[in-house]
Amino acid sequence: MQSASGAAIAASKVAGSQSPLNAVRDSVDQPPEIPDEPEIKKSRPCVIVSPGELNDNLRTVIVAPMTSKGFAAPFRVPLTHAGTKGLIVLDQVRAVDKVRMVRRLAAVSPKTLGAVIATLQEIFAP
Image (cartoon, rainbow, N blue to C red; front, top):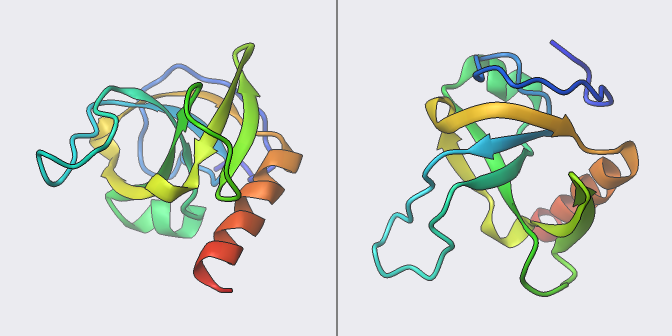
């Protein structure tokens, strides 16, 4: 398994323990739990925020979707991915089955990873 600070890029299908905390992945079909829920319903990149220990032992990963639209807020972390400026949307964190994860796109920078962790700590442990 790669460390959280790794920056490898792969295009293979996701399998178990290959999901470090900072992996940017393409997620397939994230339908909302409630049909009328105001969520974005398309496939899009996301950041895996669950630690490797959980990813190794569960069939789900915890992800935060990414968007190039939307608005800045204290709970959204800015980043640039594939030349596009966007946000990691930490107010839409959810558990996703690993079979929905298509491929690894990249790894977030250590600076962005630090901002994600700090923001999650502020949200869940004020």
